[in-house]
Structure formats: structure tokens, C-alpha cells
Image (cartoon, rainbow, N blue to C red; front, side):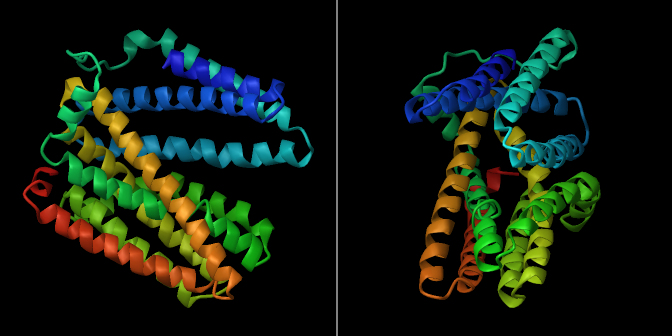
Length: 325
């Protein structure tokens, strides 16, 4: 974690100092690699800690809450400085926080839970071997589907609110609602989901896809600002249903000594789903908007989410899918 935090901090400092596209791209790459290393280390620490707990969902729900507390606080603070043309202070503050987080974690490393070390060097063969573990491939597909739909929150919703509704000032409050809902409701939603699904984390993941369908249908049925607000509420509910259950499932699927490799593949499927979803969503939305049918995007998204729901149900019933839970 220390290495990842220092690399991320150095990347953000570089962004403050450099000029020109090539150097900016290199700085972003350095920060991105550091953030990825830090995220993988954090996931492994959380997984090791969850091995000692009877209720893994609660731990991963608390992790999600802490992330959203940071998001709820950081966004308005960053916007405060950006609106005053003081972008550099934001970059330096982020760098300082990353370095501080790395140093605090390193200083307290003796108290951190440590899992088993990998017994083999990383190679393509190790990645392929992990992918052959029963249940992993269908779960990674299900995870990619989820993040494909989740990518619409920070891409198409932003276009819809700023361009179609012509209400750019509403975007910040909507994302704040998203973060505050997770902070205040995550533990309750996790408990309720456990009761509804009788403790089945895979059923919770499937339920999240179904709530996505409802969210997109709501945005289609309720035009205007009211539709955007209800969409964010339902979308965030799907997020709260999925997040702890997805993490619990991946911990159970990956052998302890292969967690670093497994989580890296998990991160790839997450990034691929969100990147493809956000990019495809923006492209389709702009095409529909150019032809005067921007509102039809939400119906198309609902149909796609329903298709992913059906595919997820089919995957869980295959021989490989039965190993997921």
C-alpha cells in the first residue's frame, strides 16, 4: 500500500507541475498505477480481515460507506477550489492525502491482517490457472455486466442533466445524494437484502440487476428533474445491494494464496465494464440526441439491463455458475 500511495501522490504532484499532453498523460499513468496498486492491496487486506469475521457483508458494507464518506466530503471541497481557479491546490491536497495514508498504514502494519503469501511467481500461466477456478469466469462476466450499467451514472446522467435538462447545477447535488444514501443506508440495505435473499449473495447480485431495470424505466417514464432524482435513488439502491455481495462472492471464489491475482482480474473486469459502459452509453445517447430522441436512451438502457438480468440468471444455473456460491 505504501508503494501505491507514494506513486499516486507523485502522479498528482506531477500533474500540478507539468505542461503538455505527453507529460500530462505520463503523470496520469503514474497516478493511475499507484491507485490500482493501492486498491489491490486494500482489497486483500479487507479479504484477510473478513476471514476472521462471521459476517463478511458487514465489513465490505463498512468499506463502501467509508469510500462514500470520502466522496461526499471531497467533491464539494474540490469544487470550491476549482470554481476559484485554484486547481493546483486540489492536486497537491490529493497527493498529500495519498502520502499520509501510505505512511499511516505502513506505521501500523503490525496490526494489519495478513493473508498467505502467493507461492508462485506471477505469470500468464498463473492468471489462466486462476481463471480456470470453478465459478470465476461466469462471476467475472456478471461483474462486467453490472459495471457496464453502473458506468451510466457518471457519463450519460451527466449529459442528460447538463445538456437535455439544462440544469448543470443539479448534477453536484445528485451525486451528493448518491454518496449520502450509501453512507446512511448501506448497513440497513445490506441487512434487508440478506433477509430477502435468505443469505444468498448471488441472488443479491441478480436483484441489483433487476433494480437497474427499474431505475432506467423510471427515468424513461418520468421526464425532467423528478425522473433524474428518482433514477439516482433507485440506481444507488442497486449499488448498495451489489457492493458487499460482490466482494463476498469473490473472496469465496479465490484461493487465499491467489488473491492478488484474482483481485487484479476482478479489477480488470470492473474497469472494462465501466469503461465500455460509459463510452457506449455516451455514444448512443449523443446519437439519439442528435436525432431528437435523447429520452429513448433510458428505454434502451432498461432493455439492455433486462437482457443482462436474464443472462445472469442463466449463468447462475450453468455447471460453472453453480460454483459461484
